[in-house]
Amino acid sequence: MLGIKKIDWYIAKTFILTFFVALLLIIGIVIIFDISEKIDYFVKNEAPIKEIIFDYYLNFIPYFVNMFSPLFVFITVIFFTSRMASNSEIIAILSSGVSYKRMLVPYIVSSIFIGLLSLGLNLFIIPQSNVTRVEFESKYVKKNETFNLRDLHYQIAPGQFVYIESFSRWNNTAYRFSIEDIKDNKLVKKVAAESARWEEETGSWNMRKVAIRDYSHGLTDEIQYKAQVDTVIELTLKDLFNNKKTVETLDAAALSDLIETQNMRGDANVMYAQIEKNRRLALPFSAIILTIMGVTLSSRKKRGGIGWNIGLGIALAFGYILFLRLSEMFVYTNTLPAWIALWIPNVLFAIIAAFIYSKAHK
Image (tube, rainbow, N blue to C red; front, top):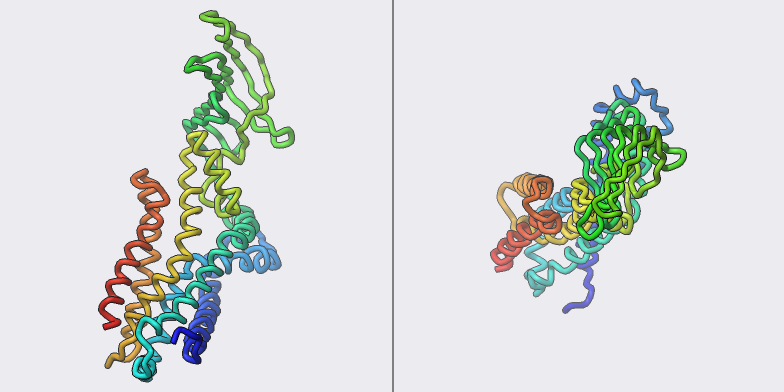
């Protein structure tokens, strides 16, 4: 009874084939809309056609597909299961002695396959492709954006802290720049500069108008004044701008390392890395939940045909994606840890799927 049957192959083949056909159709529509939205940037910044196709859109497709994979999975299941129900195929399957639970097996196996494919894309393929995509966007789409930061506090190493009152991206210069060394809860050294410019060639900070205070000899305050000092510390220009776009380009190992480093530094931008890490794991798992929900919602034959089921499926799928995005707000406001916030939609929709299944299989 548990062996592979022809109906298993039929359902799995239809599921996966319909899923990829839906992907191709929607990708074409999305690319057309995206071109219409960004065409002014491409023309204004003189983006070459070759780079638009191969650097941007070729890398944009896997990013977009994976981001909206729950929508594609749900619509796929709703569509072909409603069609099977409309053609009385579901009734024939159940009448042949196959239980409702057994009928779900090929659906679940197919959703696991899609979920693993999504997970592989998330962990290995998409981060690498995002490097090229993000670089293209920063060069041709968001070329004129400037970034200025204020009141930055970092622990760059155990017992060593950096403070930056303001940072200008225009000239890569930090103003009111200071480095403090603390040992046994006591300040032993402080280096304060009026400004510090990041030197890309040497990987160092060029500090100007520097005051060096040494408290290592008890209460004696030894002060040295220097016009200019070059220093190399565990803080680079890239560290200041680790944001949502940056974490999209990191593989799993690099993302974990960044989270560890940013936690040590007390960097508020760590939330972007935490959200990205948990989203990569939570999103593929949703394929299984939404598949079970889709089958249970559409396996009954209805008078109105499949239109109602497809409409309901689209609404619920968009609801899941919207809820997933809204759950990020709990992380931004420091209300919930990322691993809880990003898994709330899966838990909630799993409960809903279990409830619907308990009603449907009867």
